[in-house]
Length: 282
Image 1 (tube, helix red, strand yellow):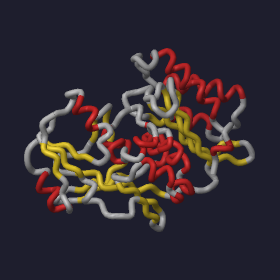
Image 2 (cartoon, rainbow, N blue to C red; image 1 turned 60 degrees about the vertical axis):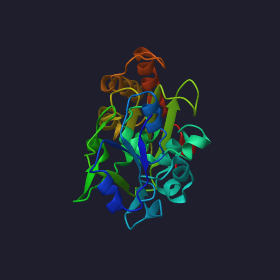
Image 3 (cartoon, rainbow, N blue to C red; image 1 turned 180 degrees about the vertical axis):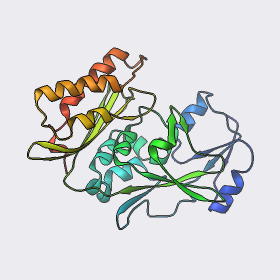
């Protein structure tokens, strides 16, 4: 691999470097270097943005939590703020690779790589973050679901970088759950992932957010299931109907990790987890 590795010390230098040649931005590099090694990418220069980012990585604001794009998954998993307000994000961060990988891989890289099997994206689709994108001429915000347009495809323009995520705090009345199904737990790319946050009162679901990964071109919110179950109890009949709705929402493919049929069965079976995992709640 022949390329320049550049480490700008401030935004001015970063924006200047992004005006020249073909480039890729680097934070942890755990996805980028694999793609380069496989000749899927061959940029003239790799620009390390870690020096540009100021501390703290995770910061509490009045109504939101701000997370820098260079925050590693280990930092997210161990953060008291994340565990307090967004347990599902802490759970998904712990599912990313082994300890060594979690100490390198960053949430910004996971977002910009836009893999439908990315563990952290399940939690983020539930939490509806606003992404802060910055260029030399402007700063803009965009919803995560609008930013990711397909597998490996995003709305990140040339000359921009992902600076941070802004996530609104949610009530402590919600329970959080994340599950990853793969041939091996931490070290494998998932066959299917599912996560939800749930608020219920006297056994009645008041609000449900449900997301799936690795069963469609992007992570998806299972909105038909959410709408169907809200206002209902989780009895056998309603769960059976929810399973049918999940199958209508997803479009899995077959690959070396599992068949489309197997993924569909796993996705439907995971519906049974909704509301049955109070040990994973706040």
